[in-house]
Image: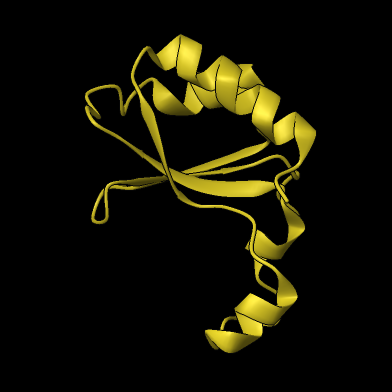
Length: 93
């Protein structure tokens, strides 16, 4: 389910950050999304976005730059939940 470009960008990102990435959420099917009561327009059904974490998140200041350099179009850091949201689709709006 994960988009090929997203996989390539994740490998680049991992190399730049230099720490193990932990995939917390990736592609989900429409059926599974419905089963869990997810948003009918969930970005995770596209296969072009992931939420990750790291064992060591000391690089918060450099993460957005590394993500963009890796090919991602949108990055959001959720410090409360220790998550990094990465998307290959350009932010619209």
